[in-house]
Image 1 (cartoon, helix red, strand yellow):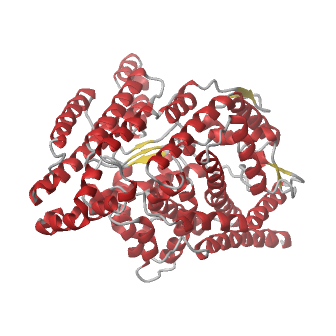
Image 2 (cartoon, one colour; image 1 turned 90 degrees about the vertical axis):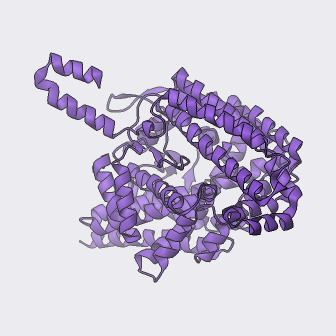
Image 3 (tube, helix red, strand yellow; image 1 turned 45 degrees about the vertical axis):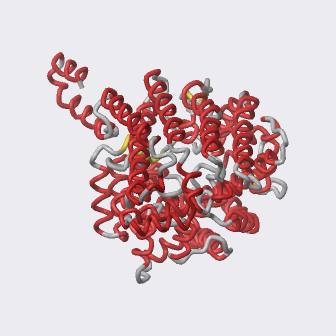
Length: 620
């Protein structure tokens, strides 16, 4: 702002445009001062956390001393976690604003160290609660009614008795986890800051640097030769680092396998699912149904080939829209459309979202060295959610905005309805909130479309969303299940081996042998590009979520009695119950084939609509 002000003094006639530009830039950036006004304030709060950790340590061995003592120690643990989440959120987001700044890296590392301290200080809780036993815990809760807010949290600990170690064991696991976190850190640093991204020239003479954000934009170029240039250059760069990324992912897989063994689980998948008490049938049914319905995915690819006038589909032909569009969606317009689309969720929901969009919750546009992708951080319980975006003013950016705001409103409603200890919700329900908002946006855009040509744009996007969210994530889940299973059995995996495994699954899903989509061997390095693989068995929940969201969105839009309240109650519930049970109680059982069959039927219905529009145009 000072720099802008000086320029304005030197050129008075330019003062107003410059000040407007400055205001716009400020509006497009999030306001981290809502977390801490400066780093000194962060340091002071970190010192407060250190003191609380000392107090928490005095609870060890004394939890069951009295109902009052029990409540005091659980409260102190909650206060520690709440303060740490805020500290960690600020450090992470400060780093993400410019991933190259040493100050950001330093603060993030300090937050990581605090996280280890928090884990160590609270390591006694689970084993001590287990040693107290369910009967005594219930007695303590009954003796102090104010403690009942911890009922679900305690039940989640007590049910894991056979997988929890003694105090010394839990401390060792905490230290082990901290000492073996390099895989994700190396991946993040390399891809966000240090990767030597290639520079390519396009057919129009423009020259671009293909970082991750640019790849996601330019892979959808209209000219086929440009798409091939983008794919070949981008994936060739990743292939250069195949050995490095092979090492990082293998180390992550070994860590997951070791933790599963330490905690007496049969394999990594069992441990990951048990974290939220998800039946294994959910994972297995998803993959079975996805593979069973690959003909629907192949139908989509064949439709895409016809509409694009291609005799043969290649992997680089997947991303450009089947219907060309020059429509732009800058953040102001995107926000208006998003707010209009969520009106079926009620006036209170719309009002809260509208206020958030004007209150410094978002960092909107891409910048050099800013973290790529998009996320929502809702962990600062006493503040508000934050959203990192890399808005490109296209329709995909609009859908991403709706997606991340679905997460933000989930956090907002959960925090307003639940005490801190029950406010944090798992991914299994989190992605339902985000994908439901995307489906509501699609419905709104189809309703306001001026003609069939515009409607085709949104139907095309909906198809691509289902491909990307259901089939693509199921494909990732199949890869994860395969590679984790191998490492659980003690097998080694190199980058080359991972590429071969991924390539085989990629070809199967895309019908390579049937000639549906031909996959170049180079592109099988794509596994190295996926950051979610460093968060074990995460991606399958995108597919289960879009499946559940389709059911909820249809019911809400059709005005089914109580549908909106059942859905919003899932969001308000936060983490106060197990996610599978919450969704099942609202009418969707994701351990059965029916919901997956319904989402595949939705995809076929959209293709029917597109083909009907095509047929009508052919008769004109």
